[in-house]
Length: 484
Image 1 (spheres, rainbow, N blue to C red):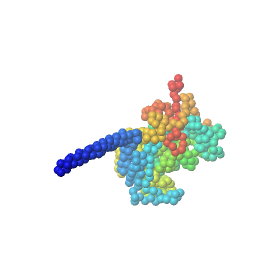
Image 2 (cartoon, helix red, strand yellow):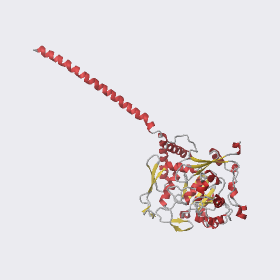
Image 3 (cartoon, rainbow, N blue to C red):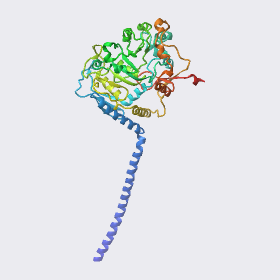
Image 4 (cartoon, one colour):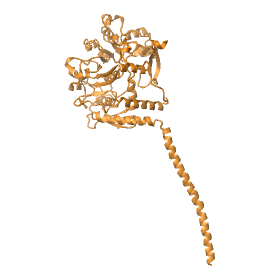
């Protein structure tokens, strides 16, 4: 009996061993295949991440830049803080205890305490202004499709028509303020002071500092007299004026024949006669309507300054938080634009390296600009933002500095055109200062200006219009040597 049992045991053991082997082997194979599959997936994800996000390098550059902007706001933001959302977007916030007492009649709400901004778009916009012409010229109207028929009519008030069907009539309105080519050039001045009209200027004595700039830009009716000299200075080079203020330009200029007037919106037959009596250069701002975070003539003055100056210092643009009326250094308070919204946007521009803010809130300490992005940092961020935009819109790379030129014009060496003004300006025209700018020899410009002009290949850039970053009108100035 023992043997059968032993035999049975032996057979059973052998059968069990045979049974386990085929079960274990497939499991080992499956485990090995699974491991290889996991490794393959991980490798695929790792190596494919660059394919999924080809702009990883640009995003990293912009995130680094955003970090710098965030730190700049923390150091310089008058209590504002910046919260980074992603590589392009951030939110600027005022402290919770800020008195938001500015009431918006249109929307029936009080001014908010936080504002969202697209930093990528802001970099591209403001760096573009450094290369642009912001004065309306004849070459722009000639190059732009239907420039004389459609666009010219929009710049003339009370024309009686929405188009210039009679070009001679439109030229009669515009000749007084229409140079043939740009009278001012990018980087023509090293430093510019843009002086606002805030009552906060009376809390400071920035006068000598303002006058030390290469050029000073002022707004509208702001008086430049000894009474306010220690606060706002006496130097007067450019003045951007709205149409209403332009009607009072004789009183505004007060005998300052060298001050350049630039009319913000429209020319008007009511003051064309007055223009003829003045020797001052007078031009029309070639501005566009952009929905950005600050409004008014002050914002346009910054645009004008950036198109002519390397460094733009602004004065009289900040106010105490929580006030309900605009205070002006020379007149009674009045209603104006939203103060918190403007303060936030100007602070953003400072931390993007566009402007430098001078305020009574900082008057007690020496200014230190080390926490503001350098030109090198800004250039890297601009290049990254541009590449990111082009790749996401299917434009690709390698378009170059004229990638946004939708319309091209060409001006030969003999197409100089007339100097602004008209033959019937009599004695005032005889001693006019238009020629100071419009016939200025290229060799007399500062080296940085000439270098930039050559870098731009003798091309002037103009905004077409609208709210887009794109769509430029570009005019190539050919030299006589190029035509041979």
